[in-house]
Amino acid sequence: MFGPSQSMGYDRSSSIFSPEGRIIQTEYAREAMKRGSIAIALKGKDGVVLAGRLRTQDLDEPSPKIHPIDYHISSIFSGYAADGRILTSRARVESQIHRFTYTSPIDINGLATKIGDLLQAYTQSGGVRPFGVGLLFAGIDSTGPQVYFVNPGGGITSCKAKAIGDGEAEAIRYLRENYTFDLTLEELEKLAVDTIRSSSKTEIPDEEIEVTVLPSKRWEESLKKL
Amino acid sequence: MYRYPNTQSNMQPPLNPNELNGLHGTTTVATKFKGGVVVVADHRASGGTFIMSKTAQKVHKLNEKTVTTISGLVSDAQYIIRLTRAEMRLFELSRNLSITTKMAGNLLASMLHGQFRTGFPFYVHLIVAGIDEEGTHVYFLDHSGSINDEEYASTGSGSLVAYGVLEALFKKEMTEAKAINVTIRALAASMERDAATGNGMDCLIITDDGIRELSNEEIDAELKKE
Image 1 (tube, chains in turn cyan, purple):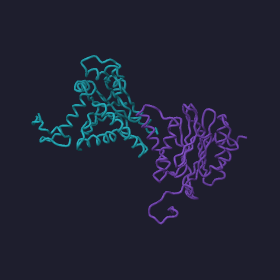
Image 2: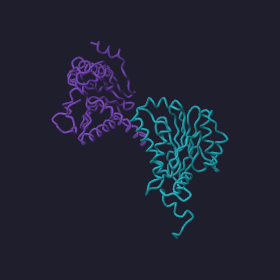
Image 3: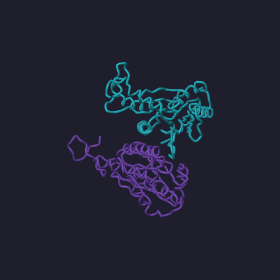
Image 4: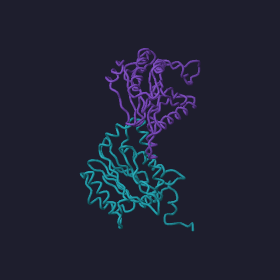
């Protein structure tokens, strides 16, 4: 029962490498991310679009998929909702710490790095497990529209368009064929919804898709906010 | 450098707020009227007998219908206002509810009291004024964290002069026009007689429609009225 398994027990701790140099717990965390309902973020010339599928069961009210972080940033995650809630809350605190310290809104890369730092710490400490979520931060800063993906290992990637969660392979295939940076916000919004529909073999009703559009002017507006 | 009184120790004991001569040079006034509040403050920041600034900002917006005025140690005041704004925004994002004037005032009072009990209080007197679903508020807050909802309040070295004018002219349930005139006259009197108050004023009116600021011309016109 406790004999050697295929991974030789190297998956029992998130702070131990396997002989091939893998941290297998973190890879399992990525699997948890892929089991969540799909989350998408796209950037275009006029701003960013986030979209996600709401998953509900029985008579539960759907919980929101897209979370505002600041006036100019929203985030969406896929994976364990409880883990994601903690990171969303942390992202809001980090964006307010930035405003408090510098009296100016945080940039998307800075925010993604802060959250990435936290996720990384949970792959290198004893007695903890990694967060079972991947997050997308989308917004506008002084460098223009930005989309960042933060994976459960703490790695951050700047993306043109990204899909994570259940059906991500199909969604990314659809985006490869249909996405360009020059799309207007209306076209991006339609593309986001179509991409979510493409990720599922079954029909998805409108009320199961949540979309947020952040136009580029949000950055100038955010500068004026308290 | 300021000499801390009655001590040989290198450790700096808390200042006696009553000995803060030269650090609290200011006058701010707020009054209630039927349907709103008027808030005024001068522009002078003093350090001893020297005028440190002629363009000091002493009225700070907290939300669409709440402002606070500051007097005392400028650094402490600016710090807790930044902190309050961050806390308010985090509350709004995490609960999806807006913060009322009453909540903002009591949040500030809690922070002042917490700091007071550490033995190193913030050297500030604040007025938190605004309108929410419970009606109009003019909260007076001191460095110990006390909070009282007043019909009218004044802070700073010139507050005694302003209170003299308010005692003579303030009436409960005044019209907006009358309240603007009385409040501006109270501050104008302390600009005449308090050396640490001057260099013009800000005048804000908060009603259910939001915050309106009077121009310098409008303020001058109020002072010329009979």
